[in-house]
Image 1: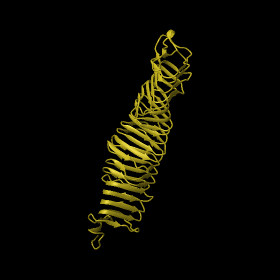
Image 2 (image 1 turned 120 degrees about the horizontal axis):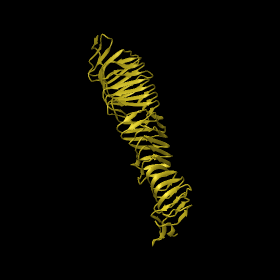
Image 3 (image 1 turned 30 degrees about the vertical axis):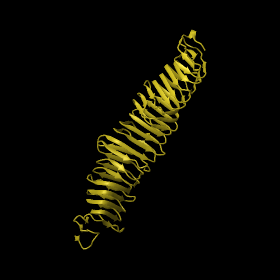
Length: 444
């Protein structure tokens, strides 16, 4: 049956009901508005510019082409033909399911309201404002992005092709369930912002960068993570402690932060309001300023630690490594630490609150500020000190004083001095300079 007697907007052409009970509306590229709440369709096939369809219960979308598509249904929404929507496809199934899984679908932006929602797109897809009370599954032949707030009560799964990108960075989105990312090969870059606790999936492998923000919530992991580029992690407490993790550079923002890496790791610009705990199977370096209000504990085993950014700002550091270098822009406290060689440079006073065990040389430069290394269980071999008032108390073993400059007072409380004790001289500038010398010939 074909009806040509009514116009549905300028350029209306025809309404046909084919032999399968499907309604076909073709208005060329003019608008179609079928918004009566009592409508009840089986399948609709629509061709127009701005297309609006309302159905009182279930509706199936056949092959349709539109600039913008707005579908409201009192039941489930499915598709049985290709949907080509260059602008925005808005589908509201209320508390019912949405299944748009034709592999040749091509959307610009989708806005989805329903229970369990599945969307397939043959290339890039953008998620507009969407509310999903069940699970969300998005499968794209290109990249996945968002331009609106996405709220998902259940699980969310995003799939892209090999080397695809996923960017879900709307700041007020909320994924209450588990979120997983996958691809037909490798994932390039992945970014997500969540306002709930976020657990990174087991086995996530990203060749580029991974940016995860759990706003006012905790960030954890369910298994190993491998990141080829930079991990940017922000949350309340961050715990990434799987022994098989393999990061390149990590940038961290949180309260209490724990990171474990199976080999070398680089610490990018990071801000930690309480404590930072880093354990690595290789060398630990920094490529950006580290601001840690509480204790920064870094364990590199027998590998080097080099935290030499001039704008670093630590409270207390606890360090385990071979050659260890730490720079702080102001005061720094040395907690319990073990190193072959220790090199500390500070723009303020240097103190220690834990035993320092340095088998080689401990070099501490506080500029014109005080150095107080007064833990009774400290164990040094050679120390080189530059500061104003310097206090070194009760070494368990002998100590060798290397080249040092003290502009104020030097206080020593040493149980036993080895044969390599240097001597202290006052130069023409009123500085006390300690020079290596035989212990039997030292002066005070």
